[in-house]
Amino acid sequence: MIKVGVNGYGVIGRRIADAVVLQPDMVLKGIAKVRADYKARLAKEKNYDLYAADDKSLKSFSEVGLNPKGVLNDLLEEVDVVVDATPGGIGAQNNPIYQKFNKKAIFEGGEKHALTGFSFVTQCNFNDAIGKRSIRVVSCNTTALCRVLNALDQGFKIKRARVVIVRRAADPDDTKRGPIDAVVLDPVALPSHHGPDVRTVLPNIDIVTMALKIPTTNMHLHSLIVSVKEKVNEDKVRDVLRNTTRILLLNSKEGIDSTAKVIDMAREIGRPRNDLYEVPVWEDSIKVVDDEIYFYIGVHQEAIVIPENMDAIRALIGGYSKEESIGITNKTLGIR
Ligand code: NAD
Image 1 (cartoon, protein in one colour):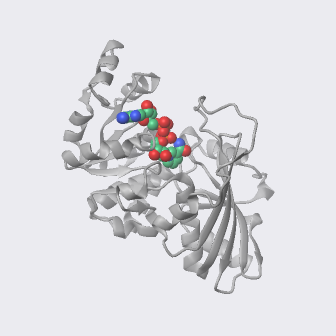
Image 2 (cartoon, protein in one colour; image 1 turned 90 degrees about the vertical axis):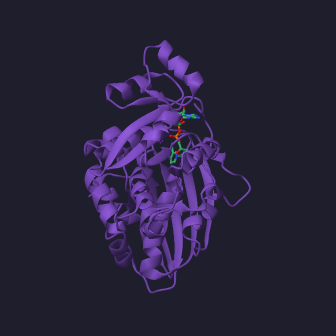
């Protein structure tokens, strides 16, 4: 059993912890948190071993009777791999601690590529991650683009990809960033950082991205124009995407014509917290004009990187093929 600790228990950390518990080859040794809040109490109710991030936090946990097992350093003694799901930039501060304890570490998309020198998306580079000490699972938008572009590149050889990203302004529980009434050019000076981030995983893809932020919390939505070298038509694009794991073809003829409907569907199929781990692609949006493929994809920002984190844990430990890891992760998370 791979012993896993999760440091940071917010949007992503909570989902990672729950997913680790579902893996037949992993054991969750505990979660570390800064605040003694309702999330800490609920983690305890799930019988997760609770650790305070540091001595200051430890005192606040004890004051409300949560009595953690110790602090982050104590959790690190117990684990083979730590997944750092703290806010962007904090992982870089934590890295020297993980190094001191000689622990393998996974960081999330809020950290810079340079922190580990390796940015991970299962389908693109699982094999290159095997045995590394630390890797970064890329952001939600980058994960979605890499899954889709990697599939199209293998199918038709991409000449270039141009993407407009419409971003959710905040996650559903985030009250600090809203309410807003605006479309924010994010950034104004183009291109956005997403294209270079894709190239940390797929260095050979010619990609330029633009991004806007809108007042929604459900999902991001991307519109893509991808030029390819090989002869292509709509049916061939659909076939390639349909045959790629963790991509889900949807059709507006079934009434799914918005991100709200996608989340409603995820709720309806019984996913925990409405989580959609797959990249939804509107198959009836796919249009080919000359060598260009036009289509829309969605990104459930809270969920999409969870399968990648499970595979990243296995890659660091070694002993699994990409297909084996994808198989176990998909089965346990209910990815069809
Ligand atoms: P979050 O703010 O929801 O959760 C982070 C948690 O870490 C919070 O509970 C915070 O209290 C805690 N924390 C802060 N400092 C800490 C410390 N020193 N030690 C331990 N815990 C600490 O953030 P999130 O959205 O879960 O993001 C985590 C990482 O995942 C970031 O790198 C982010 O960029 C990335 N990510 C986020 C999303 C998303 O849409 N939310 C999607 C993909 C990737």
